[in-house]
Length: 260
Image (cartoon, rainbow, N blue to C red):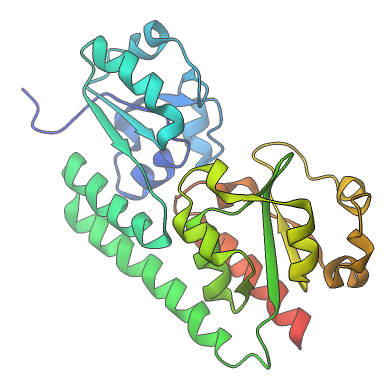
C-alpha cells in the first residue's frame, strides 16, 4: 500500500499548479474544467466543473484523494464522502492561507521539503513587493470588484494583495470578515462614496465590461473612471494558488505608475 496518494483528482483549479511545483503533478488523474495552468496539466482528463459535478465522473479515475476548496464545493464534497472518497477540503481566505495550504499539500504528497522551499520563495517575492511599496509617495484608494450584480468586493487574499502592493482597499474590513460572497456585497452608492483612485475587476470567469460600469448611476463622479484607471485582472487572482504572486506584481506595477 502506498503511503501517499498516487491518484489525485483536483477540483480546485489552483491545486495542479501547486502540485507541479512539488513534483507531484504526475499523480493527478483528473482536473476541474476551470484549470488553466500549468500547461502540462491541461492534458489531464477534465472530470468536473467547480460548483457542480457528477460524482460518478469524478470517481471514474479511481482517485485515492479528491482535493476541493471553499464552501461552494460543500455539496460536491458531501456527495463524494457518501461514495467513500478520501477528501482534502481546503478553505482559504487570506494570503497567508496560501502558504499553509502549500505546506499541507506538501505533507500530503510526501514533499514537505519542497513545500517549505516553495513557501520561502513565495513569501520572499511577496515581501519584496511589500518592501518596494513602502517608498510610494502615497497609497491610492483601490476598489476590487469580484462581481457586478450585485456588486461584490474582493475576498480576503485579494485585499491582502492590494495592501502589499501599496494600495488602500476601500472595503478591506468587509473583505477580511467576509468569507462568503454574500458577506461582501457592496451597495451601489457605497463604491461611489468611497471615491477609489484605481479599480481592479475580475468577474469570476465573466469578461469585465467597462461600459456596464460606466453606465452606473453617478459613476462619472469616481476618480478612477475620470482618469481611466480601471483594470481587468486575470482570473487567477480569485484562486488561492501560486499565481497570486504574479497578480500581486501586476497590481504593484499599476499602483506605482498611478502615483509616480
